[in-house]
Image 1 (cartoon, rainbow over the protein chains, first blue to last red):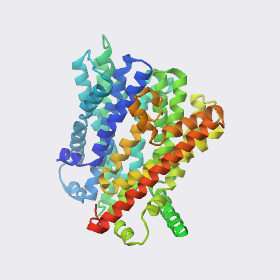
Image 2: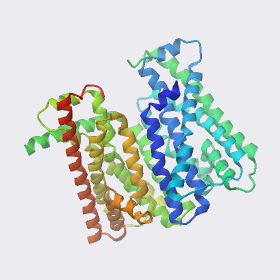
Image 3: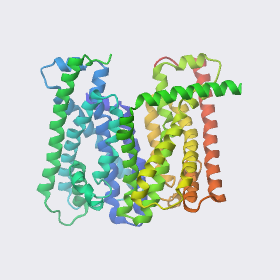
Image 4: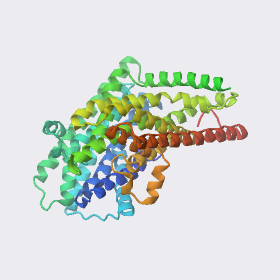
Length: 246
Length: 262
């Protein structure tokens, strides 16, 4: 159901369509400085940017949409935990966001003739799956925030570039100033982007289990925090009588 | 007639200002939106840490600060399209005047917002990235870029008002296409001739050239020529917006397609 809804959501198509100029932007930088070794960065950046944005904008709207449709009362009365329903729906949106991968590869091939070879395809596949799960877990937090604050749109927007910068989706975290590293390591995207880069280009990828573990752990923390926030939000709007926006 | 048009635009701009005020508290503006635009500029400027070195950091920094001045005015489209859902269109159609001054005034505050926000981001980050140019010329460049983009923003508004659901899609597609090809991160010359010709008839390209020249050398004829070209392009898109709104309202009156809903 959520997949059908997302396909009809302008925000979903907004993030997908924006991928095309973003691919051109990053490839133009790499091409202008004649750095073919950075093509992986140029392709990974728009992919992770779009997956994260889709989770924020389409997945992040799940609870708000339910409230506007008057469905939040029904979910609140249901014996099933609403948090799991939201998680499944945000997950469905993130799954749909994987459409960005063919969009990116086709754009890169048609504009700059890019044909990429992957050194460790199994690791890339596992990393993308764990990343999608981590994006889902963290995206739930923003879904609950849309009920808590009228400025939720602004905070959804604020979560985009700071996360992408600290997540090292184009420039690895290691190249940013030293003081940003501890902060960046708390952003799951930094583990994801390093692993994706290494799985494509590195001859030997070190500490795979540890790095995948950190990526998964941060996703789980996001998921648990999101579930807790949803319970808090539902309890709050039940008491305050703001459960319905109609 | 000119006085009435101006008065309509003035009142509409007041509505637009109140609208923006309602969207933000000072906390959500500062810790939400300003954090986002600052991070956006840093994200692209940081590309120089990986490729191109300090010179590229500064090039991308100036380019992205300028893009932030254009961002809000180009966003006039989605906001205008939402008016359709609010049910104001039938009333505007029934009114004897064109709807352009209403919508032009309604989003005029975005020009101010774009210039103020881009200036603020510049002031915060210029010491961080080691900018040493003639910063005092920046507001003129930013204002020109914002005005040039406002014309395009209104044109996008005149298109997306027909299909409000495409408002955000169209705006994001156009804005990021301009960020890619207008000379924000790399000079437009790196693209094929056809792409360069497209960039030259859209806002931002000439405004960026003029602004970069002002920041590097201060007042000079080349910079003013480029800024003049940016304003002329903005005015051309404004005229196209006028035609777009006219066709939309004539069509709506004729076939009764404009309702309270989209």
